[in-house]
Image (cartoon, rainbow, N blue to C red; front, side):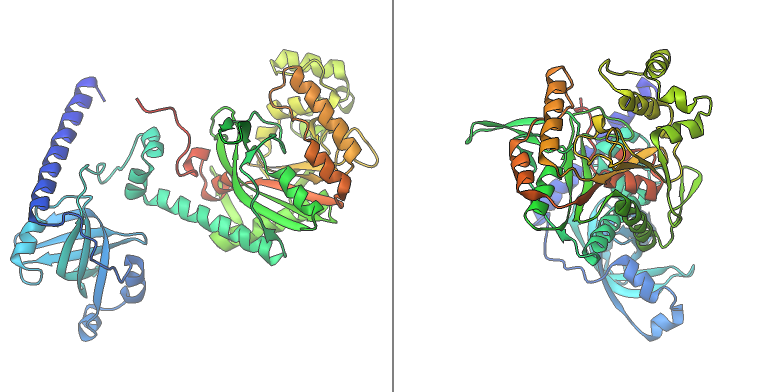
Amino acid sequence: MTHQNQSDSSQDENQIIAERRAKLTELRLTGNAFPNTFRREHLAAKLHQHFGEFTKEKLEECPTTAKVAGRMVLKRVMGKASFATLQDMSGRIQLYISDDHTGEVVHAAFKHHDLGDIFGAQGMLFKTKTGELSIRVTNLQLLTKSLHPLPEKFHGLTDQEQKYRQRYLDLITNEETRKVFTIRSKVIQAMREFFVAHDYLEVETPMMHPIPGGASARPFSTHHNALDMALYLRIAPELYLKRLVVGGMEKVFEINRNFRNEGISTRHNPEFTMVEFYEAYQDYTYLMDFTEKMFAHVAEKVLRTTQISYQGREIDLSKPFMRMTITQAIQKFHPEYSAAQLNDRDFLVNKLQTLGIHYNTRDGIGSLQLSLFDETTEHLLFEPTFIVDYPAEVSPLARRNDSNTEITDRFELYIAGREIANGFSELNDPEDQAARFQEQAKAKDAGDAEAMHYDADYIRALEYGLPPTAGEGIGIDRLVMLLTDSPSIRDVILFPQLRQED
């Protein structure tokens, strides 16, 4: 759009808004411009469900009154009769407004109402000549005057940032957007039902922490005035949930927000939703089986199928997920690397330098392997895949493997090239945990802003005894992306974080 066209468009919209404000001024003079006396009794979708198959004759034989309310999204004015389409939370239904049934005064007023206005309407159901279920309106009431014009009816919002910034407008005009967020709600409900069916207890833990912990991430900080202390928006609920397991709440889960002061991308939003869950007397292999069952259950419950399509490729969530180590995954997609090379520190450093991949000079072989995996292989894991046996140096809360103490009993789940979940057998040795916290503190002192703090109270909790426990976190936003075929995390968060509007 040229600058001149933008200017003309802005002038046109300003004129429309001025005209609508003038109409609102007139409404104020006649009485209450925003009445709240109309009570809806029916939803559009339910009316179509119950009466959509009725013939014109059957509706005439069985007169049925409908009382609906919603936003006018289509309008067709004729002489003594007009049609309008109301949209409510469930769908759309057509109204027939006429001099004969609605009255000349009300019909004349309706002709001056605008798309976007919100109405209450009551009348008899009937079928038009084209067979469309409609309401022959006898009572029509303007409930809310819309002062801004809706986007062009056939195209809706075309500016992606405007969709995110004015989500209310996107929801009004885009049925697919409404569907995405309906699915999101159902996904969370299905997960909640799955945990409850497996005897988990839903809990709530603090959103503001005196010590950020439970993940490697840069936190948001704030200040509590009354206590005169620094607090951090939580990066993960893990350490609090494991305190509950220490206390005897042996199967717990929490669905809530985490906050990480990191970059924004199609996969990252500073504020995101996760489910974290912990079960005593289990290990990480149990979690992988449990996760496979959960994902199949959620897909079947919400989509009625476990066969999904993401960005043009098919994924079967009913099949067992693949399981590979970091080096096995690298070799599968990059067979030019030998096992000996991937376990040679000098080779890894040279390869990372050649590829321009960031690493720390203090990194061990495990961290270097992970850096190579993150940049060269992660995005290629389209089929559901558990990557297992993470290095201990990058897993400060996970239990060391019994046969190889350099790695941990940990996995990350990747689907469509994205990390969806992270789980492990929990570290319940308080002395080992204290030593790892100390290593993290050294890394933080050396400049690693994402390294963990030393949490003395959590160590004290472990000293009372944490039973052998398995724990996992699942990114709900990324799971919803998968189940709704959404390319960006912003598409599945109602109000994603954006730069401040000019």
